[in-house]
Length: 555
Image (cartoon, rainbow, N blue to C red; front, side, top):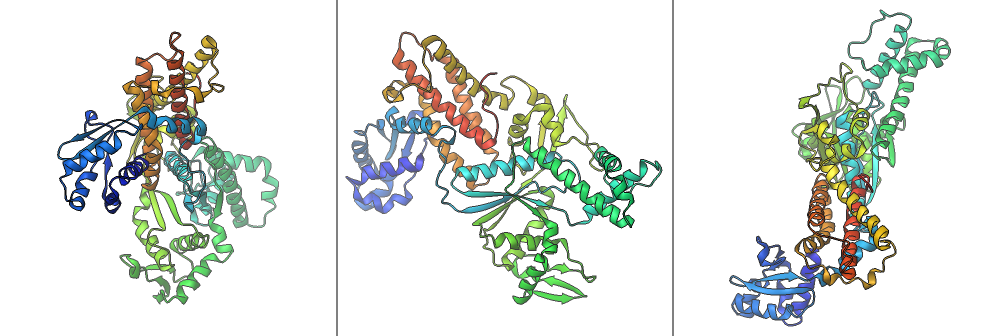
């Protein structure tokens, strides 16, 4: 809104004062500190003073005369030494309300995806157990970021990196094998670093009941463990997909770490780096000259025993992404990866990536609270609340909203009691209740006045009747929401979408509590207010769609 209004104002002034073109980039259109000074204030007169060899106050008066005849302004005032304060009229908001009505739950979305193609990789949990709360927070943050970028005009590919080539998969196989043996031999030793959750026992039981004969026919223990690891991995990966679906999260690409090795992609990237003269051998190992690109020390790619480091696999994975021609990528990582960022960034610069191509959003820990007490969890002991447990407890919408209430790089205390409250104290209830209230008004309009909101001819609605202060505040907020969404997208601040939702809901609830919408004695005003309500509901639906929460009709 601000960008568009600023251009409108410059174009109007330009007709009388063409010199404004010379200072247009320095012009600021900002909301004043106090409401009494209008909706926006413009500093153009100070910038034009030198060019026109006149006092700012005189130029401000000229600007006032130019603008005050325009119907988009209710009034224009000069303040201080030459500020021009603009008071917008309802006329200004007419096309904005119409846009909100016509675009439904895509209000403000840039439909032609011309800004480029990007990749967002998130969750990427080891397929060795169910998703925990940190994974869930990462899933919500990553998915919301993807939806924000789609809204803002990007083609987005969502990717899950399957960690299926490391020691954790071997340990998964050993854990299942031990539980399998314990069915007949209760004292069979369990590996010290094994996965202790009940789910391992369930997988072992399933193998025992359905695959026992096949397992007994295998020629070696190693073959059995490998088979069990693959079986458990696939089972747990399916479970991960099911848990993510509970939050409406789906991925476009599932990329297997194992394929980096089976398809020779690690060898390929090391060959590429060698040919560029960026590697050297020392102590029998192969090193990458990451210090040339900002790292604090060079890093090992291939150990003296001939095995590749995890870092080499990561470089190969990102080299694959680099060749897919994304404008940029975003990785959503746990906060424990913070120190790994400069290392990988330096490797990507070595591969020829641009400075701003690789971006990381960090996810901090989630703590659960119930009855004012923290719920203690231990993944090692297998006693932790899973993402599915939390969704079952409080519902999908509360999980999504609460995970988005704070910057992802800060710790989050999740209050289960608050998430279950059916009152305005609960923020997700509060924003959904705004939608439900509007739907309730529409049902009443149909029952009492035979007005179907979907068939109402809005071309004859007189929006100039929307003169009350809360009405103007709502229209103004609807107007600025798309720009606010574009801004939080570019800043990678998905948590701020909840702030936008809450602010809109808050303005609506005040309006609802203090004004009537269904006036029998004033049909024109009633239709104008219903028109505004439909615009508000569509904007709420747009925000809910980005977050993937439900637009509830009744509460």
